[in-house]
Length: 589
Image 1: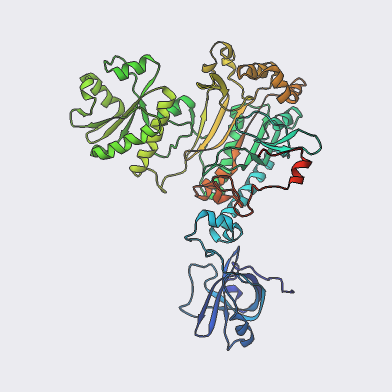
Image 2 (image 1 turned 30 degrees about the vertical axis):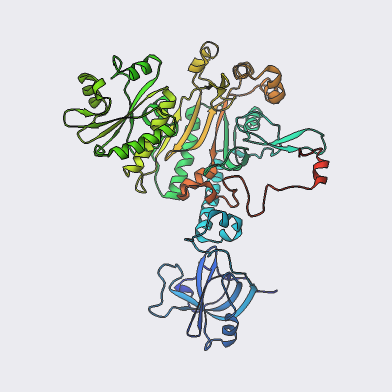
């Protein structure tokens, strides 16, 4: 079917085009028949233009226009005119003009779509994902993907201007232990052997540093076979970065420059640098999280010093077991009812707390179930330490340090919501979190695991502690946090083969396993590996935040459901027996 190539898009025409003969192509968004005159809102990804079929203007086109229905694909030719007085539409950029149709060509008809193609719709996410190709026609969804495209271009332009080289790394690689499960790909040619899809290009980008490419970046697909949630997908995108002959300060400067570009180009905000920094220990003590939202106050206070001589058994035992007593002050919440306090207590219990201590601040005293166990000095010092005033409400938790701080961090966010502290008026806030522990201890398996990954360098001054007290070793690792979301994480890497071997040994990775899994990297280090480090952004999450969305599915073209299914093409799916035979695979019944 021959049709004329468009002269303008549906978001382009203005009053200066009045009198011009134009060709528009697009989809029928809305059809209205008002007394014989047919009005069509014609839509493409650029916008909407109203086109008019009037019998007195062109009866042939008008007659054909009667057949039009929602989502028909059409091409029209006509003349731009100024809309009659009183019919202008200020909500449209093209709202002062419309097009009188001379010719209409119906390029394709459409069945009635399962939901309206408009921004605000009452349709379940599953239905929208099943018909994602229709969902992608909605202006808000297209806007989010156009924003993502813009962020791609900002990224590439910025890194190119700073002498970075974009290099692609393999999608089929060797399975290596990096924390999450690998997606495995069976080899047809090599019986019984498997490729893995990369969880990240970690080892490859380190090899690129050994190869002399001192500034590398890549916008890359990564894959992890793990449980789903709103901000997690089996396949996701990273901005991957690695640099040679640098320290943390060099890397921070480069990354802060990129964030300045994003803030300016997307939010029109001039970002002030350097970005504030907080150690892991301080972040946990003040916010109960290694990705704290610092846009509002409501900081936690460690109270061990207040109760260091306490006779209250719970506090006494906690301090003697190297635990923590942490407090959270809720300003003006002293009038909370017992029922409200019970709901909050249940909230922390579900997170693993044994209970919650609450105190109402009265004029000269504290009203609390445990008040009788506290001395007057302890009450006085507690009020002073948390800067409490009459009418405030104070929460206390005590127990294992990291677990207790983490639970209080969750309560902090819950109280911030209840108190209306988290709202759209908050200014975006970035934060570097540094000095993470190199290892984390797992009670169940009674062994250490790498908090980040096994290639993370310890602080130089902490290397002697790797054998004597591994739990105290700090990593040269860093995370970048935006509005309480971890948007990037990285580290200075180990570039010495002997130190890397020591790291593997502490993680319970035998010399044989290390050689089998990472032999190629260890061999490369023997041939002059430069000091290097890097970082990777979770690009989907970054785009989600800049788009003002709550799920990364909103900024991905074809996402999976929360259970990892693609409802549109019904994957994962069964495959033919012949395909399995070629891959030397037999399924268990």
